[in-house]
Length: 160
View 1 (tube, rainbow, N blue to C red):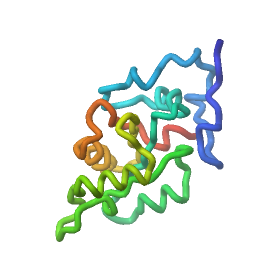
View 2 (cartoon, rainbow, N blue to C red):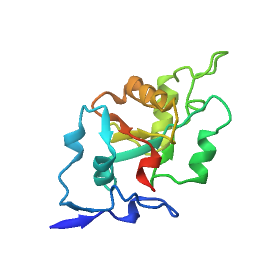
View 3 (cartoon, rainbow, N blue to C red):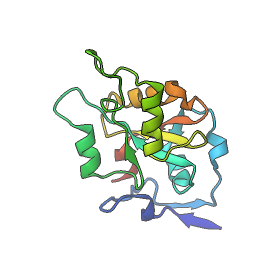
View 4 (cartoon, helix red, strand yellow):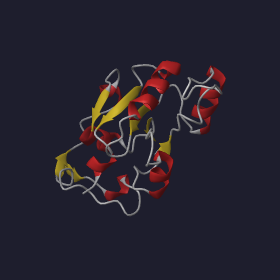
């Protein structure tokens, strides 16, 4: 059997990339197959998108001239994804982006419906140089290497 990548994977207004809109073989990847992998290919992430234990977080953050949260809200974004704000989920300090307390981190993950058995795939806007910071925080605050991943690409790789 074969299937085509469905536009149901994407938010309204999202265009499928011709690179991924071709017919693929039956689903050959499972959440268990990405356990421990840091980087996840876009095609694998698309296959995993509908799995209930795979969550997508946009970790876009910029120094100036762009606002990651606003870009997330304006779209496009991966359907069902949430925004992970390294400014909001941080310890109050005169220094920026300090790691949150374990309690604050746990509360943020709970609020997003992310459990310890969920795989989290962090992605960002095109040309976002700081998306790795969200990945680093999630991994180091206890979600761990086996369950925390980065998309090998950006949201731009999911559309034309």
